[in-house]
Length: 111
Ligand code: AMP
Ligand code: ZN
Image (cartoon, rainbow, N blue to C red; front, side):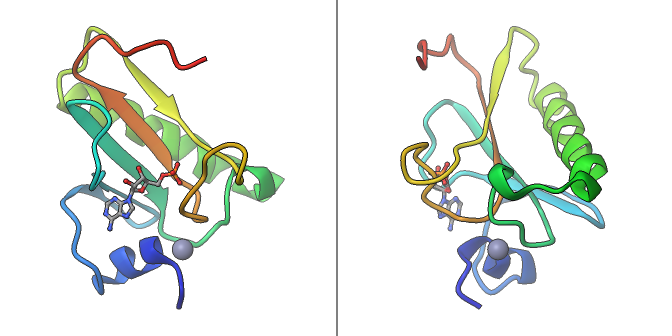
């Protein structure tokens, strides 16, 4: 298995987990770009948002719901950002679908 996030899922690589259920885990980003930077990922390997299928719609919704719930848990009431990068030009460095949850300060405009 070559995927770093799949290794985190099976516990081969440590991560600071903040949430886990049957389908999803969330953990702190190793190189935080904001005071709160958490990655929310499906346990089933999916390359990225570009290859989601209609069968993945419910799982995708659950990932966003988990992000919003974690944001409440981390008291990001004043706002936050949920981001997913896709492919080389989109800045995706880990080819396993993940949503970044960023907050804890006024975020800079991203584009
Ligand atoms: P992206 O560049 O959108 O693909 O995001 C990948 C993210 O994964 C980056 O923000 C990295 O800092 C983060 N990352 C890479 N390796 C690890 C790891 N072992 N534990 C936690 N976060 C990681
Ligand atoms: Zn993977």
